[in-house]
Image (cartoon, rainbow, N blue to C red; front, side, top):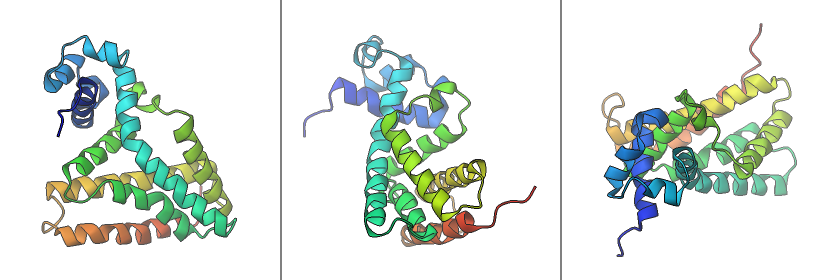
Length: 209
């Protein structure tokens, strides 16, 4: 197997360090040192640290987005009004499928998603492009039809909760930190449990004032 090229080595190193330390905590020097590349390589291949972050996140998120989009296409080809449970499975399922339990890459992806959700750096919210926005907006529209009583703000809060549940579970299973050290079998079952739990959470009545 051929060794990864410099660009791929930088992406791999940056994914690891951004996931562990956030945008501001991962310096360009630390990334290039881990990648075995010279300091100028980030500028040459990506232009800036922020553009490197965008490339890292898109590499991780694009397969998830593609699977989410394909799942929604299948549902809408069958009915214009999929059930909440079907929408949750189409949206959340790929998060589990692309972040396999017990897999180092899956755990790193999970940590990166948690960083995106919680990192205060503006760059963590500025990486999205039209492809990501399209998937997000399509699911928002579908969930709005299925859950007409929810305000847009509460609906988006619940969707972000889907991301958080999936990411936390994948990290914990990989690290062996769940109660009683949940076995890999239980980790695989978590996809089904999460969909049941998240369907109930998404379907809950709107929160009162």
